[in-house]
Amino acid sequence: MSKEYFDKIANEWDNIRKGYFTQIIRENAFSFAGVKPGKLAADIGAGTGFITEGLVNLGLRVIAVDQSEPMLEIIKQKLGNGTRIDYRIGMAEKLPIDDSTVDYAFANMSLHHVQDPLDALHEVIRILKPDGKLVVTDLDKHNFEFLKHEHHDVWLGFNRHDVIKWYQKVGFNVIFIDDAEEDCCAQSSCGCHQAKIGIFLALGIK
Image: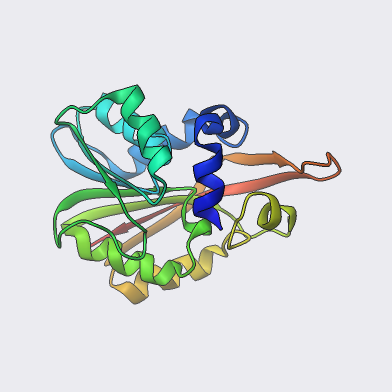
C-alpha cells in the first residue's frame, strides 16, 4: 500500500523526489494559483514538504496533510513547529479540515496514489472558501506498469479530459489545464525500464 511505502522511504524521499521533478513544478503551480502572502493553503499529500516549504517562504500559512506520520515528521524537522504550519494526519478522501476554510489547495503528485480521485476532489471543494483555488500537478496517462509495483501508484497517470470532467462534476466553476513544462523521469529497479512522463497543472476555482 502507498502508506507503508511512504512510511518506509520518508527519510530518503527528498533525494528520491529530485529525480522525479524539480522546483519548476512548484513555481508554476504557485504562479497558476496566483498565491498571495497571508492566505491559508492546504498541502494535500504533503510528503516531506516540497509544496509546504515553498508556500511558507512566500508568506502563506499552511495546513500540511499526509497519511504518513514519518513524512510529516520530516517536515517538522526541516521547518519546525511554528504558527505558520499546521500538521495533520489524514487521507485525501477524508481531509481533517473544516468546510470553507482555505484559500488555496495543492495536490502535487499525490492524486495518482488516491483510490478514488473524485472523492478527493469532492473533499477539496468542501474545504475551499468561495473563489478558493485548487491546483493539481500530476502525471499524464502512461503505460509504465513498474510504477504500480515499485512505487505503489494506484493510477498510471490521468487523461486530461477526465480531469476536466471530474472538476466539473464536483462543482468547480472555472477550470484550466496546461503543461507543467517538465517531465517526470523514473527508472525501474532492474534498470530495464526508463519512464519519461508529461506533467500537467489543473486549476479549479470554486
